[in-house]
Image 1 (spheres, rainbow, N blue to C red):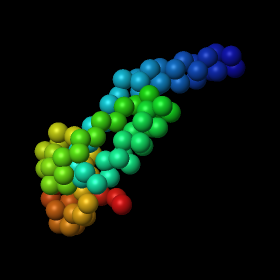
Image 2: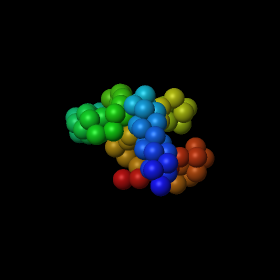
Image 3: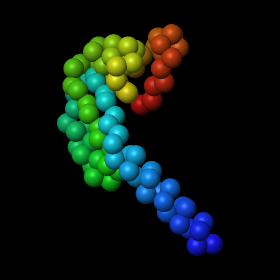
Length: 93
């Protein structure tokens, strides 16, 4: 039993070490930037995962996510289903 607990603990520690080096990059709409900045700070405090968001406008965020140069994009306006399907993107409010 002690061996199982030790393995589980080592797995958790290793996972935390890996997560500590993660940075998620995003770009897009300028309007939500203040909120995203606050969320990014709070998220990093809890998870050690950095969130880098560039406020470059909705069009820029859409272009970058389509080009796969960022991990996520943000837009003030939703994309059409056809555009999502063609780009292989998933959208949520």
